[in-house]
Figure 1 (cartoon, rainbow, N blue to C red):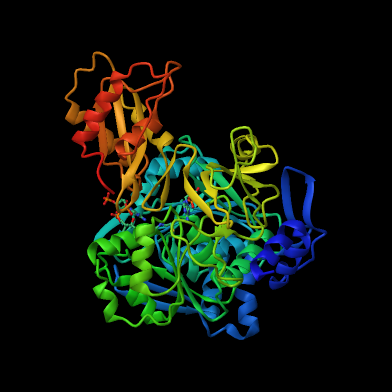
Figure 2 (cartoon, rainbow, N blue to C red):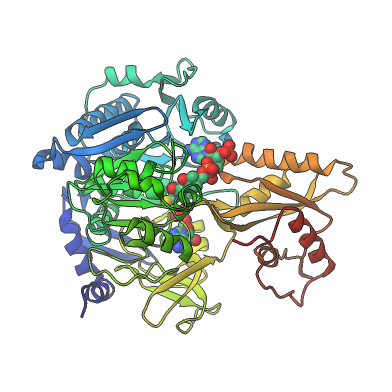
Length: 632
Ligand code: COA
Ligand code: AMP
């Protein structure tokens, strides 16, 4: 039996033995009572009774074990012309002091701390400082608007917010502080304090009594030690898009997460301590949590924080420069980044300027990788290109080609096979398994492995109804796809209203809520249409209130501006159109799927239950005006 099959079977047949063995890579303060606590199934807990500290495992133990001088974090910022490397000792010193700042502000175990930061080392330091004292961090991506930030402040109720004066997007300075001030203004919950890092590119104005200057706070703080936590205590909350405007607060624990991170660094990514691993994502996303911050540091490897873009900072050779400069062993990015590079540099001429022979593999995730992009990357970069499938909820890959276990031949369009720990099933509507090759809803038999989410923040009911109710005994992933005869899985799209724009997960439902709030809009629909760089782009259709005597062009512009204001630039909502009616079934269900197929130029059947077939004609006309369908 091959390594993979052997490990995969063991992980499902003897999960306790499998994960107890994996847990040897972590330094525990106290051993567990049970590896898997199933006493409250379908709510499971891993390593119940055990104690540890995640920050200790990510920093202190490496310093004690001889890695003090080794690089822990490399910061490379083409947008500010800055490069800086922190050794494990230096990172530990910074984090211990920052933990002291939080302690001075009265933050203790279980308190929430919100982090609103761009890709600067202080972002990772903030996460680790929280982990050090048992505070639960919640990082919010910089591309979200004040309104989205406020929703998260209201839900997580942080006592302190860590932020900065600005982020830099290409050549533009984005002032974070006014966005933060506005979010605190409109939120019901008010944090007691904010700690603001003043960057040279912009100076934030400070509110006396509430806002504290980062540098002075650090200067007057003493380092603090790690607090021993329950393995089941929450490490962080990360909000992700669901089907409504209320994001889901995914909760990650300490113990299971640390074990899973370590397991993946070795068996999936095949990265050793001392090697450089670069996840070119953002700390605001799950990829940033798992593989910019925790995974590489728990493993004693070196992580890279890149404050730049794949193109334009300054050119499409930025990735290759970073790989060659820091001897990156593996790069992890989203297919959209490769498509952006390919568009600007189809022959990959910039690559010729750099020696990237240090690179062993390229990992892709965040959205479906189209075979064309995969083949282009394989031909140009000459390393295995490994698509792998995962979600904020799982925190690590559900399906992948585990290079540290057994490398399988790559099949374009497939993220290869289920990863040990995940019993992946393809089900029909009644919950029965479909045959190989047939599309089904993808569900994972419970229990999920360690490191996956344990609940939604203070909302066990929503956790149950969103994920566990449809298929009893399974976790419903929200993705659909199929498995071939050789066990390769294919992820074809979402079964819900979630779309993926440039590898960013967004909710069309949330966008519809915003459009519907426009005073002239009677009803609306938002769909994700194929985009040859970003994978998908949102497109909105609005029906105006009868009697709304408005210029349609003006309303369109207002709708686009409204989404930017309420959700943020990251929504990349640039296409809105006004229609007289939306296509619906007789029972009133908007035919979003049919509209999407029309926009993507795919064959589509007009449902027999359609109320007014002529409504599709109007949609087709409007799509044409927007330039759809286009060949992708
Ligand atoms: N703070 C503030 N604004 C941000 C932001 C941030 N952290 N991130 C993105 N934005 C803004 C962008 O500036 C852009 O604004 P604009 O409409 O004024 O131009 C908007 O949000 C949309 O951003 P994006 O979709 O990223 O488009 P882009 O044209 O700036 O860049 C790519 C396109 C493909 C280069 C970029 O999306 C990319 O690198 N994608 C990779 C995604 C990724 O790594 N995902 C993580 C999952 S692994
Ligand atoms: P996020 O929670 O932001 O990581 O987004 C998770 C969603 O992105 C998944 O449910 C999928 O729809 C999609 N996704 C992520 N990785 C892949 C992949 N490798 N192939 C196809 N879809 C993916």
